[in-house]
Length: 190
Image 1 (cartoon, rainbow, N blue to C red):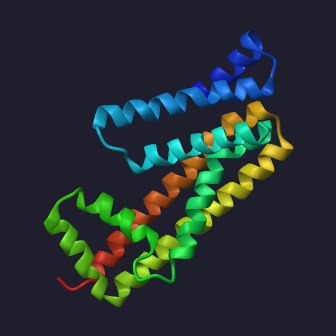
Image 2: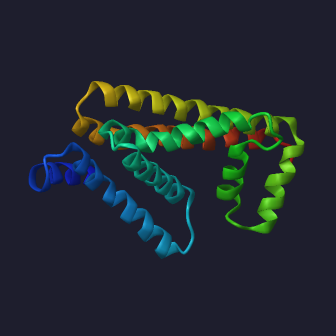
């Protein structure tokens, strides 16, 4: 809700410009991501995605600064990620394999070897493809929904709804992925 408050405050106090108010709304997510990177001394996948979203916003500023482009900026990143997931499906290790390995092994070399060795099972290979396809389709759909919102409802509503939309999409995907991974792991030989 801080981006929405920043937007409203900038709109009322600093400038009536929609463009400047949207720039103010971007400040908090950028500062928060920067703080997390400095505090943890490494970039998390979430910080990378937020930073990419803001980089897209900066490019949008130079392209003409259409407020609608700024409102869609985060979804450019998730749409790009979704498309990358879908394009990675033909490869032996689709994109979500790497995310799964990062989060499930926590840097432990033995857990990493175990994770990678499970690829010898056709069930695991299919599971990685299904998870990658689900993330790809969900994030492309999230982009489409946000684009429709940007062109049909006021900017303040888009700013209020956007974190819920992307947050709910991500929470559903993570929850489903974890449940699905447990079911697949239970079917593997011990």
